[in-house]
Image: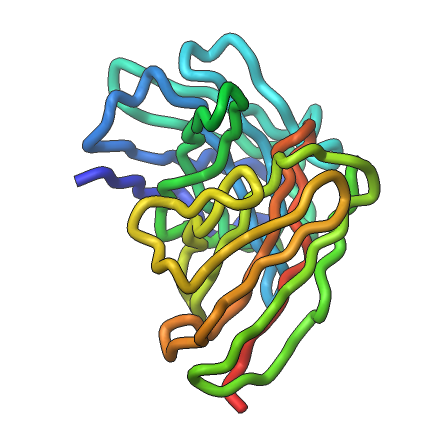
Length: 125
Length: 107
């Protein structure tokens, strides 16, 4: 079964750090881009960052650049989000998701086809 | 960053109703748009990619259309499991951006 499961969430003080993990199973992990998306309490979805399958290319939301770092361990099928200098506005459920590429009539699209259940991060003193 | 604006922000509908949700991009994004559904307390689920292509396993009552800046998601006959919040997402450029969501409630 294709599955993603996040872990590592919790309560952290402002300015603190936390590392989230996403365990992948049921598919060839190292060929897929992987993404982190978050959702603040009562708010909509917000794309955070993604990382190419071989770890060579990454993209970030402007508000997390320089504070968050995305990485992966393809030998262990694990995907990470290192979060430093955390702020109250980073409080959210964090989801990891797989990026699937689709080819339609010679056009390529990508979308997040598999999602984990999410892990809650609360930044508060 | 490209801004995605959905309308309406919420709606009430009955089982069997036809509903249409729109998504407008602040600049052209070709057909690089996906739609997701999120049930209460659940992770999002992919419905449509590339504006109009149905994800495997998604019922045919869902359809998408549009191009450039204006897109629509149509549900031809609303079912009980369709209630929840719908989001569009542009995958034309980085950072990826979601619409603010459309909450579909029971009338």
